[in-house]
Image 1: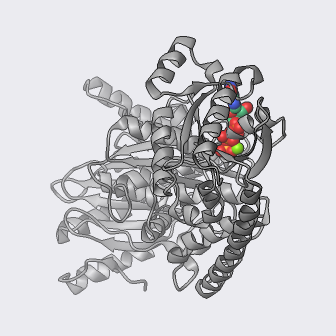
Image 2: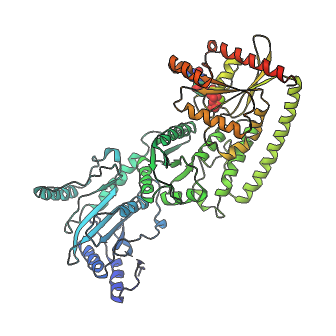
Image 3: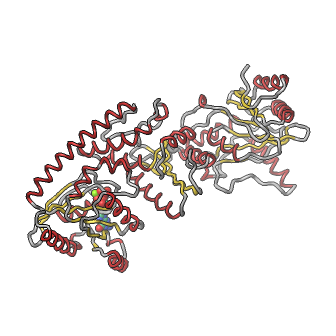
Amino acid sequence: MKKLSGNIAGLKAGQIRRLENLYRRRTPPEYLITPETARELCLLSGEIRRQTGLLIDRQGRITCVIVGDNRRIVIPDLSEYRTAPGRLNGLRCIHTHLKNEPLSRDDLTDLALLKLDMMAAVTLTKGGEPHEIHIGHILPNPDKRDSFQYPLEGYKCVNEIIFCRKNAENNFQLTKSTDGSPYKILPPIKPNLLDIGCIELIQAIEAELAQAKPAHKAGEAGERAILVCVSTDSKDNAVDSMDELKELAISGGIEVLETVIQKRSRPDSRFLMGQGKLGELSLLALQKGASMLVFDQELNPSQIRSITDLTEIKVIDRTQLILDIFAQRARTREGKLQVELAQFKYLLPRLVTKNTAMSRLTGGIGGRGPGETKLELNRRQVRDRISRLEKAIEMVIRQRRQQRAKRSKKSLPVISIIGYTNAGKSTLLNTLTKSNVLAEKRLFATLDPSSRRLKFPKETEVIITDTVGFIKNIPKDLLVAFRATLEELNNADLLLHVIDIGNPRFEDQIESVERILSDLNLNKIPMLRIFNKQDIVEKETVENLCRLYDSIPISANNESTLAPLIKKMEHLIESICTKHPET
Ligand SMILES: Nc1nc2c(ncn2[C@@H]2O[C@H](COP(=O)(O)OP(=O)(O)OP(=O)(O)O)[C@@H](O)[C@H]2O)c(=O)[nH]1
Ligand SMILES: [Mg+2]
């Protein structure tokens, strides 16, 4: 005989036997539960004054009898029933409610997180008999809220009976969630109408879920993501941050299915958001056929683990996404070394001694090193690799210093183009020097620095360099790993700070870039602010902004707009070089 689950302390031997006997009962496919089983469940539950529940599989077998307290039951670990993504878990839960209440929030959270076939609550009459049954199921496609076709005439019929009867009493209401929640809660049914075509209904839900899946093709990285932000400050900031996360995701080749912002007074230390909300999120992922959740916040290792375990879907954060984009972009040996170092540094504290929890994070975004290498998942190997990478990068830094020394002997002044990612830095380098550095509408198109010579009208020659773009909350490990690249900026005589004024967040971007510059101790170098993409902003606005920020407007892709900039650069370089003739 199978064991009872939950709170059985203090029950009489006879009650325990009767509870155990429930395991013998079978449910035919059309029934949610048989009237006899429902009756016995209610009588027992009323007698012991504890909620009592059953988990029933699709063969109609009872796989678990659960005893709770007077307010709830706790469904035991169902990890052995784990199913393929996009499927329900094959178990329905039918449990009693002692106080004539409908499905509770906890019930719906269980439904969502455990991906139960159905969740039902049976209320009791005064005599302890079944009174009404409240049924909830996952709504296969919340966008088509009321179009779900119930498979069986029988069920519709049940529905209509209730509908009509209640109609006559003038208080019917087809329970429809107005809050956009991803569940469908059916109108309560009477205990003599339990043959609702249960298995067919479950199969229909599952079939529709399967259909929802590849509605359109995934991004080039093969991932379909829901972006999530748990915000504790003003909504606007969250929206802006999410817009950028979306651009990052698209740049990383991820298809964005949905963005979810949850406001909280403070983040939950374990799950970042409440478990109920996480349940809905996990359902949304199921309904949309998402393959991953991308969090805007940096998640600590245990949060990643808890959220992954609870939702059973791959979870990454903003940092990991950025690291992944860098991994996709790295071309040179140096770039690859730097990205790999940053990735391993990020991964190390996230590796548990046993590799189980990480295994779900492998493959695709978040588990891919530069080039198609797979990230190793063993702590010791990772540590070895980190120290080897650090040595290799140290070599690179040394070589660079030598090169730099040689270059400064030739005493060509250096102008470095810096700025937020996608601001138009590479485009500017290309137009100024008629070269062909990759410039595209993606975040972090450039990783590896390129240098070109530029001759000013008065024949002064300079070296102009383009480098990796900045972003707000730039991952710490990346900054450390890109030390070599960023050190190069120390050598600059002038920084050109390119700003995309067509971007609604350009003011925040200026702030982020200039904060990073001061973090890198580069704020002593003379800097020129350049407002790029003037062609997509109204002329008057551009003029006002330039006055306000003391900057020069250009269109980096249009050579004819660059004359004032060139003049100013030449002038600045001349004055800098006369001040410091040794450079
Ligand atoms: N409308 C307009 N678009 C521009 C201008 N300058 C650059 N762009 C576009 O902006 C996008 C980004 O340009 P990039 O030069 O790659 O930007 P970047 O700053 O080097 O970006 P990362 O290397 O990704 O950090 C490209 O699609 C360019 O075509 C401009 O003056 N006007
Ligand atoms: Mg670039």
